[in-house]
Image 1 (cartoon, one colour):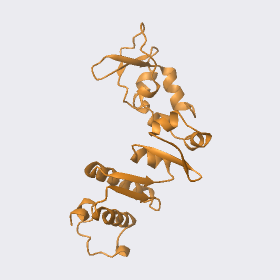
Image 2 (cartoon, one colour):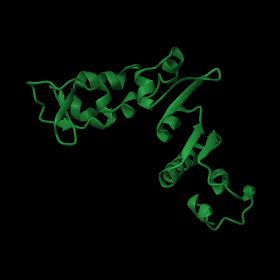
Image 3 (cartoon, rainbow, N blue to C red):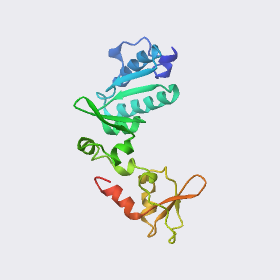
Image 4 (cartoon, rainbow, N blue to C red):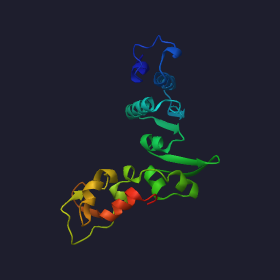
Length: 195
């Protein structure tokens, strides 16, 4: 019963699979996997057959469960956007071999092969890359009067940075300068296919 509640199927215990929606059927599958309390969960394309709205709902549910359970999950998908959204680390396979493994940011900024470069080519860089991944050393002199954190996404600070002629100061949690970010750097990330 606890697992049924955990996956959001309370009061549907007596339903047959054909009486459940696609998303609810996926929840049944996840509940079955969790019932044996495995150290590692392996999910092979669990959301690929779902419509976009239910798929997004299931991804949100998946993130909620992962946050609660703290399990290691191997999640197979052909959708890089889904991998970015759900994974801490991503492995890209080509012809049955792992050709590169790392964070989404590492894969996009430092593709190990042409295959990885092509695979990540159309990913919106601004929604993935952080200020810290592209910042330059701190600059002396011109001061825009604005500061940002290295952990912020480029898409979240782009409008602020582009409005300033001078590079924007990047500061750590103690407000110590750790870098700078210019308008040109932001424009390159937002409008270039490759950084």
